[in-house]
Amino acid sequence: MSAPLLTSLAEPRGDRPDALTLGGRACSREELLGAAGAVAARIAGAPVVAVRATPTAETVTAVVGALLAGVPVVPVPPDSGPAERDHILRDSKAALLLTGQAEDGAGQAAGPAAPVETVPVDLAERAAWSGPEPDPESTAFVLYTSGTTGAPKGALISRRAVAADLDALAGAWAWTAEDTLVHGLPLFHVHGLVLGVLGALRVGGRLVHTGRPTPAAYAAAGGSLYFGVPTVWHRVVQDPDAARALSAARLLVSGSAPLPAPVFRDLESLTGHRPVERYGMTETLITLSTRADGERRPGYVGAPLSGIRTRVAAEEGAEIGELQLTGPTLFDGYLNRPEATADSYTEDGWFRTGDIAAIEPDGFHRIVGRASTDLIKSGGYRIGAGEVENALLDHPAVREAAVVGAPHEDLGQQIVAYVVADGVTEAELIDFVAGQLSVHKRPRKVRFLEALPRNAMGKPQKKLLPPA
Ligand code: MCA
Ligand code: AMP
Image (cartoon, rainbow, N blue to C red; front, side, top):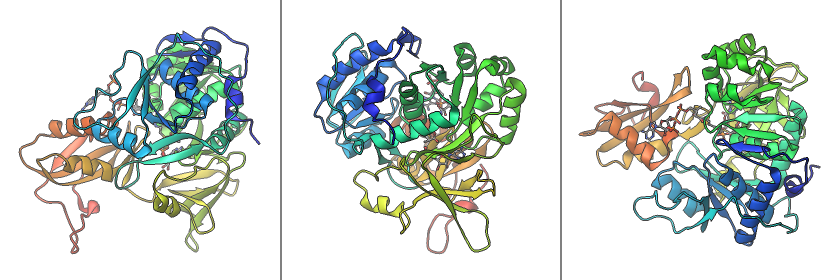
């Protein structure tokens, strides 16, 4: 059984003035906890709180403050447009939005915005928090994540799940208070926020957040442990000087999307490190990983973490099938979506990942792909084709839209939109989606067609679309 979340966050540790550095601003654990205590005092008793998740010390303070007070956190992507932001705020019923002091959290939405009170986080405030440890089964986060159709769903992540996952990862990666974790990932997903912030706080090590995950910033940070999505590692190996600077690190970790074998090999030849690859989902947190003390094999995501059980639901005679999981890191369902929650489990209670996998005789797992092509992974971001199609159809010039993920060397997949539309340009449609949803959900290419290919029932046939 893992130690409760609050205890590990608030525990006194050998403090140093640069325990956390975000965007060049350093603070000690004591400063963070003092400012977070002030946040906790202000929001205690709220049913839920939204946090505008910029990569800043204010965001970390807001999240830690809410966790101290036992208030579930809804991270809001800082560049989310009115459609995405309003959906998140309305669906979660968040009435408070914590933001950095200089930011106008509510001002970015055009049109009728969700009713929300903006609460600025002041890093100079101090208050000691002495509230009780919240129930480990209570919700720590509501993380909005895309499905194949419709708007993103809020995955309910308990404090127990977070604590269990971080402890399992600390074991697999030998992650300790001696480590300096470096990454530049967004703070509104599991990778950057749960692993990349709470992980460092829980083990008591240092964190350097580079603002953006550029090779130069990674090279300059001097860390022992580095996190990146495959796109980041692809960019690192294209900058050999930056890559070589990572030789002094202890462990390079890749996740959120498949790490191409050539990138694995280039990382090894330039840095001397065979990267650790791990696999997870918003709904399950991280469940499979190779280990600091174990074999790391290109194309494989290792074995189940402590407490996780896996199985592959393969057809008779086949070796690959849907990966299914159970364990203490699983979510508690989608907020307000009992049917979608029920659909995500098998009758005997295993979570259906929607990923196709194979398990080798030695227990190593290989992720072969996704069952549905309507869930796109671009730059490590999960994007629903249906959500982008709906955004495009909201443009007055667009009559029909079909969105796919096309293979892309750097991004893994890139979003390509096929539209039937008049009097609008590719750039205008790209900007429209970036503005309504968020920048990473924008199509990178738009193709104009006379009509979408459809079957006899009138259903669009994405397989018959011309190449991107
Ligand atoms: C470009 N920009 C625009 C537009 N086009 N802005 C407005 N409108 C437009 N039309 C700007 C952006 O604001 C940004 O500016 C810059 O151009 C680059 O855009 P972006 O698309 O962000 O850049 P990229 O280079 O394609 O990004 C690659 C990336 C990114 C940095 C690797 O994809 C990334 O951060 N990925 C991480 C995703 C992640 O953490 N996933 C974890 C979820 P500016 O440069 O000024 O900002 S998965 C998870 O949590 C599970 C559990 C797991 O397994 O980990
Ligand atoms: P998200 O909910 O955004 O975390 O996306 C989860 C999805 O990312 C999984 O269902 C997988 O399709 C994919 N994914 C995460 N890590 C890996 C990995 N190491 N290899 C392959 N796919 C991955």
